Length: 65
Image 1: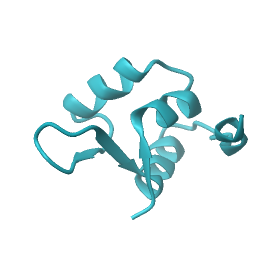
Image 2: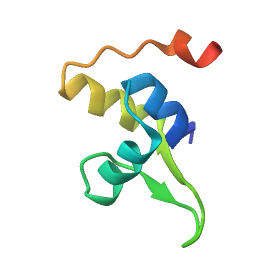
Image 3: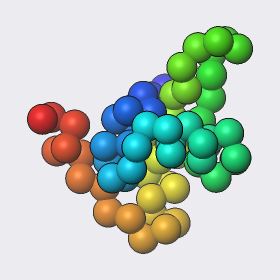
Image 4: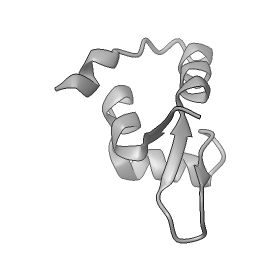
């Protein structure tokens, strides 16, 4: 699974890391924890589907900066 951190997802969506975490907890954005106390991860495929469903264009070059 090609997964992204909440920080990278936040950068792509133009929101804060806390917003991404809140969306995951609320079930609005698909994300998983490997263990109960680990960081969240979001699969690239699920993020692309999430963005497409909301008309959001992802600029992957933002992650290269």
